Length: 133
Image 1 (cartoon, rainbow, N blue to C red):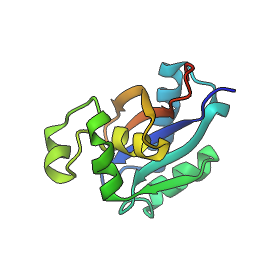
Image 2: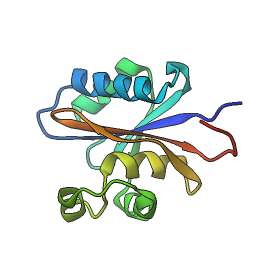
Image 3: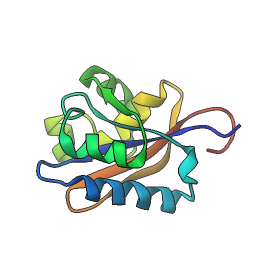
């Protein structure tokens, strides 16, 4: 059985759901990931109730994981991308990567490092199962 993959999302105020959906689909394409393997969308807890990400999750047919700040910071040691702005504002190198990793649990691994559009970021992670995601 192949591991389920989580798409971590970061987004700026004013970013539309369509941009988030397009970025998730681009991440899937870059990773060579079948849409059926995507199991959840994840973002920071304080952003998870915002319309763009809620609408994007619904459009993708995915549950939305709201990741607490403490879990984001705990996952940060496994985050390969370092954004000075995110480190200053959130205490993590990449919100998208940290959200995806935190949702996967302590064994989560990055499948696709953060990619970006004008207003959003997306990274893919999967729980480590000993097989390729």
